[in-house]
Amino acid sequence: MRTALPLLLLLLPALAGAQVRQPPRKPAPPPKPVAVPAKAPAIQIPLARITGEVYDSIAGGPLVGATVQFVESENPANVRSVRTDSVGLFVLDSMRVGTYIVGMIHEQVDRLGLESRVIQVNIVGSGDVSLSLGLPSPATMLANVCGGQGAGMEKGAFMGVVRSARGTPLEGNARVRVQYLETTVSPTGVSRRFPSRFADATPSGAFLLCGVPSDATITTRAYAGIDSSGVVELPMPRHGLLLRDLYVANPQRIVKPPAGPTERPQTLLKGTSKVRGIVRDSAGKPLVGARVSVPGTGTEGTSGGGGAFTFDQLPGGSWMVEARAVGFEPRRVAVDLIDGTESAAEISLEGLAPRLDTVRVQADRWTREMGAFEERKKQGGGYFMDDQQLERRNALFVGDIMRSMPGISVQPGANGGRDRVLMRGSAGAGSCVPAVFLNGMNTPVPDGVIDGLVSAPEVRAVEVYTRNGSTPPQFQSRNGCGSIVIWTGQRRRPGDR
Image (cartoon, rainbow, N blue to C red; front, side):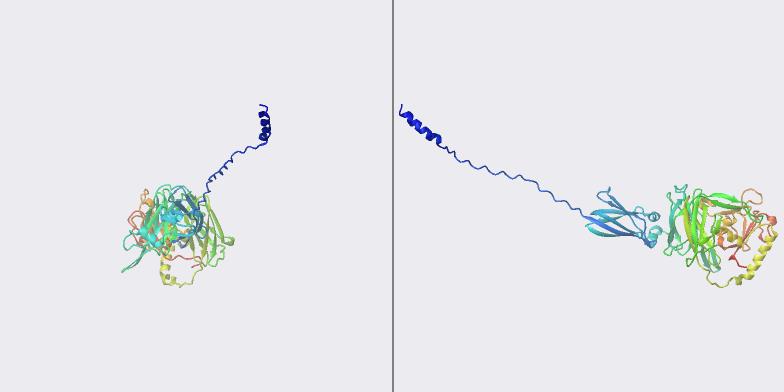
């Protein structure tokens, strides 16, 4: 036992200092990479830039102030709008590629009845895109709106919209009356007449009258309920399509007492409209002292410094403004008077062109007839109006000439028709149609519409006899209603003898 223990003790130190080696460990596998999703590239949406123009083929110029709308076919809620500038151009940026429905909004589009006309435009790529739009040509419009008119009819047309000068809806169905000179050549001679034609407007006021001579100057007047316009003169354009709106109103009528024993009461038409303008000569130089008037309203005055004139308290509606000056041709321009607003008018007068003195050929005839007229005027017994008085009245219709004559009743025609000139009659009650003598010849006018016989500018003198006892024998008739005697011819101008 003693020998074994030391041996064990001797071994203990060796065992104590001995290192125990463990088997080598396998290296841990590297971590697997985590997959990070790559960032998706941005989707590039093709965008286009549209530049365009809108042309008015009827007016022959750019369509200014038109609203052009683009409606995306696949997404009708996506609407882009742009307005044309002073030269009819427009630009739209950042337009998505796709199919669009394109339409226009403009008063000219309304007049032509093209509100529902649209076109389809396909934008197929980015970049600049050019687009030209326009209104149909006059020939196209005439073919579309008047294609059904009868053979032999004139191809011109007058169209527009009747509007209220108050800016409110029309009060009643609107109607437009048009007159123009119609000359007929026959084996017996040349005859002239001024027929009246009518166009009934739609509830919105749009009207159309086909068959108007393309080379005529028409006189027109619009009616809607108790509202009406003045009498407006409009030249037909060469291409035959006249576009013109007409404004109507109900003027206030004021009777102006006569200024003297030889004068008659005058009816003035008043309202809240105003017009300011300038009278110039053909070179652009202002004309001072020109006589300016608004025919049919009783308003007149003269141009002041710089050729300027101003009229206020005018009735609303479409009217004419006329200017006259010694040595110049008279001229009228149409103006639209809107209630409570001021309108502008610029009138350019042309100098009188040299002309042959054709009056001398008729001098003996006129001297004889007008001499007899003046003699009857001195004797009295009737009511007389010479060419100087007619010039001051400046009426466009014979009914307007007769309106202030004692014993005369001027009644508007049905549905805006021509005025009827009537008298009280010998019994003193009711109204009857007087006998009409044109240049001394008894010319029956059974309906009392004298405007169908002669135009107001042709009338040189008028005699009215309401009582048979005071009617000259050559102008008497058995109708028991009195007589109206009308003399035609060129009126004297200021300064003529």
